[in-house]
Length: 592
Image 1 (cartoon, helix red, strand yellow):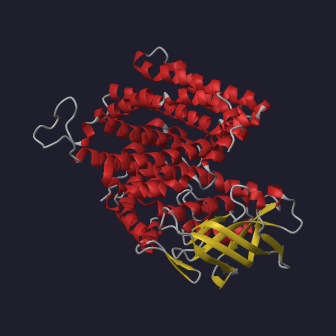
Image 2: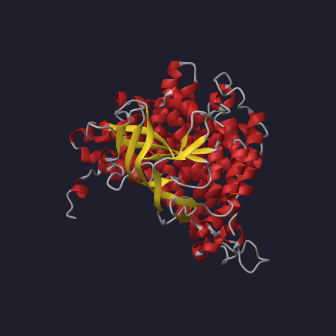
Image 3: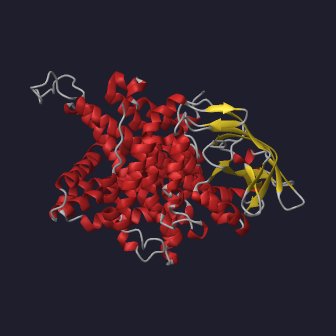
């Protein structure tokens, strides 16, 4: 049977020591974000995820969903678990107090999101999507719509979903055909079909608020003619009570590789009553608000899977007896040594640990920058933070989800034949993780976004938020002998990344295929260097804490993991640079 224990100690390290949230106490929303609140919040979230959500994960995967004449019933226990989630106040955690929220920063919500995804990814999709819908409505809808819909969404009694995809319009949303016809009362009638709508129908919440991309009459072709609309599943009366059902329906659910307990719906809208969100033909701008938040969240989904896969791989490696260590028996009193003595097993375990702990710091740092971009009183700080978020979001989405799938596969490999057996639970992590590399923009699309949109902005303005702090860190610690094993490889591989960046920029002007053809490798290379910077900083903090008499076991493990990352994982940039600079000719001119 699988197991999960929330990594509360590591969350505390990242929030208190790596990010030092105490320094932001004067930023709105951060005054109450100190350790006295943070620790009980982390512990309460851990208890809920370990004791309520995790026990339902395998059961939900096995039982699956029930579809009956437009209604979707989630597996046994899910509705009760959602009520526990709502009663704990978790949906309102970072929402605006004006609508019943607690007003806390997003960086404190990310640990909860990771824990939920580790414990039960299928469950986590409904509240995760609702939070994204809340953000879009909060930033773009009229005050009347916000007043009418947000309080119940913030409380968790209503959920929200994003309705983009159509059979002919996946990544290319310019092909959307769903229509919006004006009604006399200022509302609109939505007609069309959407597919792949996660939680488009479910029995967890009283109402479901659909955010729908559609076209107004005479709208320009392509994405410039798309508008965003809000349509409730059940109409809402002026006093906030629920009225008659709207003209929308779930026509079926998909039978999928993974996330079996999360409904992926086919939705039809037959003149559904809706209201415009934002300006006509500006729907993509509003939807990207939701999608950018969702991409960070999806990255954390991959991280959540990686963490639980790591924990189960490590536990099995310590317990399973197989063969003797090649240097001689390590446990002579036993018939064989545990798997953990073998070099290849240790390589896989340390790869998983380096990934999970490094990506946790990167994800939380990105969430913090997102908070500063929206909350900091200094406009220059807001701009710099937003530049960083714009640059790093496709990296977080792609690298954390690619890695989540890779780490889940490593857990299966460590388990050997038993990893392929459902009873041990790790095969589910492989199946569940696979979708994260696809939805909210495939990872190939994220790479094109990074190379084609983010790198050129302001002749490298976004890049300066990444390279300049890294260079300053290297310079600061260059003469510290204890840091040499971390700063020297960081300096070398940062140079490789800069070389790749220049090559992409120069070649892309003359031959866009060269930039596009190397985009995925570049994104991977960028991610490896970003994590190297994270690990160098974590190692530096750990050294300081050890010198001050801190937790020896914890900080020595940090340093050892940083060392493993620098020596065994970071060198992957070399082959990536070679592939990037080989150009696209062999790809684009080969007969297929």
